[in-house]
Amino acid sequence: MTFNPGNMSMEVTTKLGFIFPLSKRILFKIWNEYSYNLEKGSAGLNEVLIEIPYKVNKNLDFGIGWRHTDRIHAFDSDYATSSLTLYF
Image (tube, helix red, strand yellow):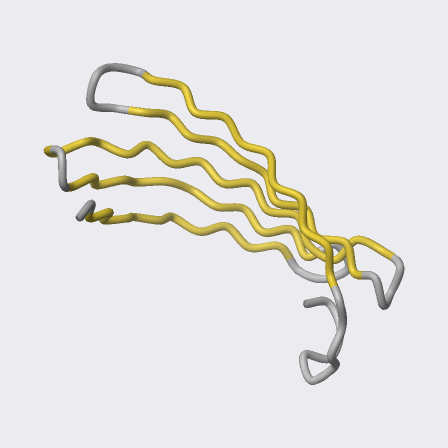
């Protein structure tokens, strides 16, 4: 949030993503999340995410990735990410 986090407000978020198979076990995922704050009448947050999950077996994926968070009227952040996905 680019304003006082104690404020209650409504946001609309759009997400657009693509998945490209690199092999039978490895995917490349990229997506964008854009948030528009209805109270302020302006954009508040834009995030770009990239992940490369590896299918260990039918019940387990392990992934590494990167996330860039653009707080439109404040500071930006970059993150290295990892994930573990279990399928039941």
